[in-house]
Length: 131
Image (cartoon, rainbow, N blue to C red; front, side, top):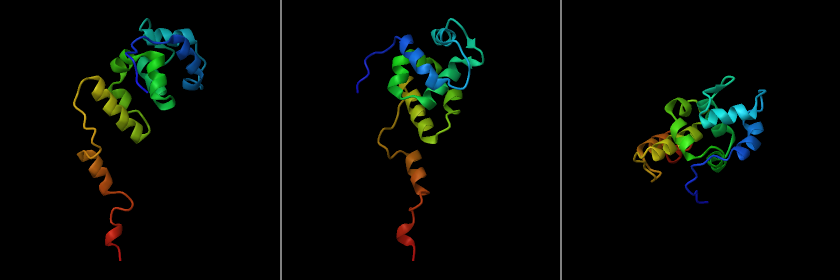
């Protein structure tokens, strides 16, 4: 799937997704949208970073882009947000996304030094040397 230059948020779509993002709090969808728009810094205890973190942990990438737009993700995908992503694989993926969005160089080979170090300690790494 190719993403067009989706810079404009779809707030009606965001409002439909909010129950799956913020299911454990009582909130006003319009207040959340104002936070995303930048008209308000916070709604309850939800900041832009907190909303993005919840989206990352609960939604697909394409739904996030459609709901809030690439600019929102680029401006709010900070190291603060990334280090709070629970799943290690997702955290690594979003570290790459942040680098791409900010124009930094990224190794896509799959055999970069971090990946090789991770493979050194896999469960079956010494299977050929066992007696």
